[in-house]
View 1: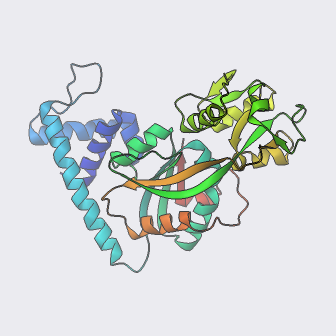
View 2: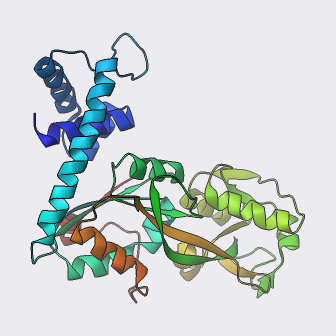
Length: 315
């Protein structure tokens, strides 16, 4: 039984999805099924309870999963030690990030990192915040990026940077052209927000509560791109990180207004599993992320053919 088989099995248990495990390992869904059957034949056990509608391991399957986690941890530590012995920083890095960071904050860092370490194969996947934490805890991904980080057992949090929060509105909105706007004024407008379980929404709600204000969004979305599209059609105003709307402001699709006199920010953080042996490539990526932001004009447009060889972005 190869380490790769245990990795596919581990991802299958974590995701409870044959298609997801296939995508994570660059193989077909049929190959995942075949590997599972091969493991069952090898150990002469039933690993997945096929009588259940939902994915569920048998007692033997749970025993195998626990053992596979220990074996994968040893293999990961060995790989890190061997990488340390090389003079070239290389190898794969799997990064899980929320949409707003992955699309608007990450690109200049990735360009700088791959320019300095071209032998690294960086794979980026866009996820909801709660899934990023799960990815790191289950060791499916090496590094995570989230907003408003929450202390979580088993996860190391490294400060990344702070986003400045601003109000966005349609260019013909009466607030457009203002230097500043108060939270009280925003609360009187039709408001477009994020879904209630998204950390950025919770942070914005906390700002309003601090002022004893209540805002009931007219629309709610699970990612920054749909929030911006709603504001572009003048469905309401929204509070978003400034870095996420630079392109729309440049082409005149949105207007930006600073909020109040004090600087309102959204903290971003890097996550990795506590006790995880970081390869030299992973450590260099964290060093790049925590350094000063590169002065590079970025865009969430697809990478060039050369870039796609190094970075695989999965939504």
